Length: 546
Image 1 (cartoon, rainbow, N blue to C red):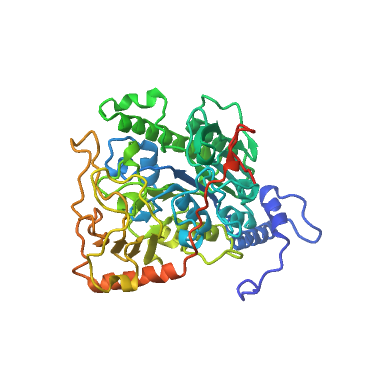
Image 2: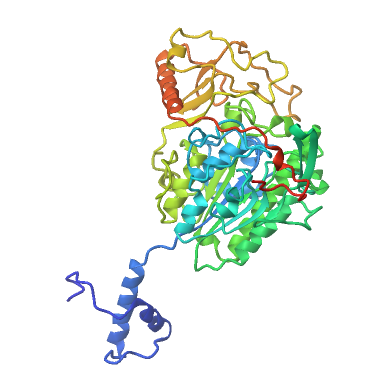
């Protein structure tokens, strides 16, 4: 009667009842062991289990380096990526997913959930000898997940600053770290050579750490294999009492172009040597991701895992990458620089085997993952990302309508197209009111709905076909060198071929106003001069010097 009336039954504790359900151990005094007692216990057990909160999922984020739009099988690439293809096909492929055009900015926005204009990192990357890192008053994703009860591990490329020990991954929320601190290095030597201009020397030194200690003994071992082994070992040894957060930031497929020869042999048909080596590098990366997911399954974690794969920016066409048919490349604000390869897969998804065309940004992972973890954003600064779980898992409309790609008032293109005369600060040839709203000589881009506005010099503006399939290495932009403003409908014109700025002046005006609002609320660029004290001559390894 009390059950029908809705009152909470007064039963023994749930843990004891689980024991009864398993073995019908000794009954407490006063509780009969007959059939009614068994039924009563089972009803209570069912009620207890229905009240138990779901276990927080394991969270695994794999970040590729410089992987281009046209470098994966499902985008029609000649490069074979069977593991990535299968994982994406079983989850949700993110076909309007955006990163930043460079390493440090994407990684900072992944771990802070904040645009780079709000952290001072809106210009280029953190170079080896710059006394800079993600501001220490920013609360990072692993810190938030630790507060939610997670064990946090990082393997691979950091590239968020290391001039002080306080900047290191193990001081920013990761329980363990194994990898390299700078932006690039040899895949076998794990060394980085840097010109220290003020000393007029080039210094080559090891950049490999296990925790905060220099890691030695890995010479002549390929980084993708080393990092995969560490990730698999962490998965195998994980104690499931706590949920796992694993951030695997692979070196692949950033330059230098190095890979075991057996991985290039299947690509003998690719005539371009850079592309052929790059294809082999993609293949070993694909194999590595497959090995990680196999480990998650074999050790019983997969059924409660959310697995995210993402590039950090578009492909670098100068080093074998390809973004065809998108315009531009790494370092640019064109779609080829910022539209990223990505997917999410998990048994926990309510829909699988679909493509998402919702607007999603790399800054959205922080609030999405913290929400999945049952955590909170207490202590963070205002977040620019959105919780995208229901959008991805259930197909609900994306809460994101707008995306700031960047505003960099001191941009200089480090690798301009060799056959263009575009200057860094083009002259105005547009509406008379444009610069009264926003200085359109500034390198900037913003997305709202289907519209994308670019100003200043967005970077190399050509299209780069796949080397083995076309005789032309690039298709030139016809834009005059003085042009400094573009408007595209990137939903229907992802290749950014048809500038609509003159047809839609009201849209231009609205987006320029939004850029100005962001610019007004941005923090100053923090891009300090190199510090010669970075010289690792005394230690033989790159690391903190202050």
